[in-house]
Image (cartoon, rainbow, N blue to C red; front, top):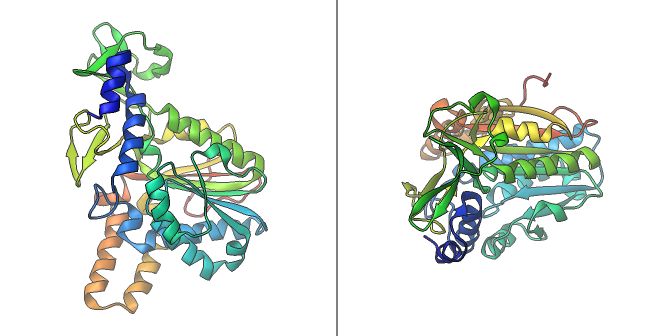
Length: 348
């Protein structure tokens, strides 16, 4: 366990999981290389350039159909090593040079170490610790890939005495029976003892804030992550270290800690402020915005070994048994902006 978390527990008693997770994440991203084959996990942009390129084309398409506003804040939350945005900008430069001229790049990133890596690929970017300081005087085009899953999570556990808030104590997991039952959806309140329900209040607040800004100033946002539609029961909290699952409590601050995203909760948080599209499965979304066509084009000029790599990447990104179904895509758009590509039906 991270020393600062152990000290906080010693000084104040067991910590809510969300607080311990936030402290661990700050240390982890400041001191570790999470991304790529040499890190702890591999994200979609690291699998293939096709992912970022298609996201760039998605952004260019909705900007053009919205009338090509002449000032835009282009935003990424948690840009990692800058791979996604670098690929997206390359595609935007070819397809919509006007957007390149209109956009100012803003990156939400707390890690000083990662900011340095991002600056190498994305010169001229403006960095922010959170979404609150993003520009509010122009439309915003925002992308967040595997960002919500790492937000500090709250877990409730059904005990023999009722629902309890799960906490991190000096000896392991601890329960606080003062948990407010109103946070447990009525449909699952009578779940048997041992059941776990997750709420990511930080992620819900973040999505609501993005939607509120988009509703007020125009624009669109794309959230991509592994997740499900709730309300649901189940403990999805996980730690990944060197590509392998690890014990969450034993590796606090030394491993990537995340949880599956309840996209129903995210959509509900955003709905009062802007139009909601999806969620849809990542595989169907990528296919709808041109994954197959892009992979075919890349393979045309590639060597035989490279063709195999491109096809393997396409399958990994879109196949049901890989990332195609587990990962979900949610879009938010201002009321007067067009429906985004990749979402086959409008919400009712």
